[in-house]
Amino acid sequence: MRNRVIIENVKPEIDNGRFFIKRIPGERVDVSADIFSDGHDVLRAALLFKHENDKNWSEVPMVEGLNDVWTAAFTVEKEGFYEYKVEGWVDHLNTWYKGFLKKQEDGQDMAVELKIGADLLRKAAVSKTDKASKLAKTLEGKYEAAVEAVMAEEFAATVAEFPLRQFQTVYDNHLRVRVGRSKELFSAWYEFFPRSTALLPGKHGTFKDAARLLPRIQELGFDVLYLPPIHPVGKLNRKGKNNAVTAESNDPGSPWAIGSEEGGHKAVAPELGTLEDYKKLIREAEKMGIEIAFDLAFQCAPDHPYIKEHPEWFLWRPDGTIMYAENPPKKYQDIVPINFESDDWENLWNELKSVVLFWVEQGVKIFRVDNPHTKPFRFWDWLIGEVQRDHPDVLFLSESFTRPKVMAELAKGGFTQSYSYFTWRTTKKEVEEYMTELTQTELREYFRPNFWPNTPDILPYELMGANVNAFVKRLLMASTLSSNYGLYGPAYEFLENSGHTGGKEEYHNSEKYEIRHYDWTERNRLTDIMTKINNIRRENPALQTTWNIQFTRTDSDHLMSYVKTTDDLSNIIWCVVNFDTQYAQSGFVEVPKALLKITGRVNLKVTDLLSGESYHWFNDWNYVEINPYKWPAHIFKVEL
Image (cartoon, one colour):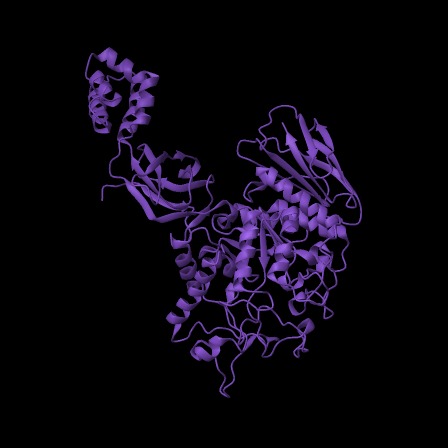
């Protein structure tokens, strides 16, 4: 009860330490806390941290700022979990020292003070031979020499080096950092349906056809190839083209209607090939620096084997029929939701975990999880923790477009990346506000956004009937605002912009319900920009994180300007986007002198990595002009 220091408002701390924060090796953890005490004594505080495999704690002194806010930081160096905590205490040695200086200046006799100081130095000393012990002896010697020793600069350094720790207050609320592999923060995703990869129109594509396209994905610069569900598609209540309730005999159905007499969640659709074909696809992709992302959709077609084997895992109507999925007025007759409130929930959970582990054993390291917000949070907390305990390199992407608190809770519970609202942030104001929310609030600690301009479910209104300039603009924004981004590839690349006839944000003739045929040899403006932007991202570390963005002022509502830098300013990327996709716009952009540590006159060389053109800027505000028919943005590399 003799610890007088109060520690509160520690950040980052997610829900009182219930959840961990997220980093990758080399990232910094900035910690702050309100630390104060009664009276006027000098306080000291320290940030302590250690990797889960380390025995001893490392320590960083905290620095006092305004209004009793103390700060410190540490850098995580290896994967795994780190722990951190905060300590604060009254430092009687430092209190005495500062008092000594004032009393000496006032001309007081310091004989007694010297004895007090000597005693405190011995208490602070680590050994009898260190500097603190030696100075203690000096303070007990001749008066003039002792006073001179205290007034010397070296004495202040000794006081700082040997904090007198007594009656510490320790804030240790199980604060943790999960450090994952670098792809958790930096990735580029390309999605296609493997059944649409056949060489000939009207044919069902296979894993072997998909493998034939790997060199193309590599050429475009994507490092994650995401495939929709690869399982047998249900036959009962199968949907037809454009979500028609009745399917024709040759309609393939939605891949998300999983399971038939051919198998369930541990089987592959025979039309795609064999399990060995899929494993071979994974291996061939890995050789090219590409990972295959697996679609994990915990739902069933009405003829899934689970329904016969475990009817207790589903909901049944009073008339004996099974309850299919609904989101009124929408009906999903081809999909049956799993009842997570089943009395047999433990066996259900373990079975679903076995599904994930089965695919991990086949070589899968990335799971894109379909609609996780329709399953219990505690289930995902448990499942992800169980899987990553033994397979820490496995990633989980949350495909959830729902309410903010629900999306945040999923991210807290362990999802390594999350779909975001970028799809619907279309104005300059909306984008700036959203990026500020993602990077400058608590979300930054646990919510890693993945920016998708489109998905098989979503053709945004902004892209309906839009020209190629709009597609290029959204691609450039997604890939430079966020370090994780993705595309429903062929629809985007080949400029599909026809919306649903009912006015919904959906594609007309959606590939979800039919096999498409693409000319994969085609190259166009979007193909070129995908290749260019992915190369730019790989070559510039400033674009490999989301958290370093700073918006700068422009004098035009059409132009949005933002800068990303590495901590040491060795790489500086400055993007200026024209939101007008029809006409050229011009204006002036302000140089962020404080961010770039520029004192005095500006002298910058900026090279547009898209066009190759270079300019020299000597003013605080500089002129830019952007013609969307050339490039709808500048991506400048800045040389100081």
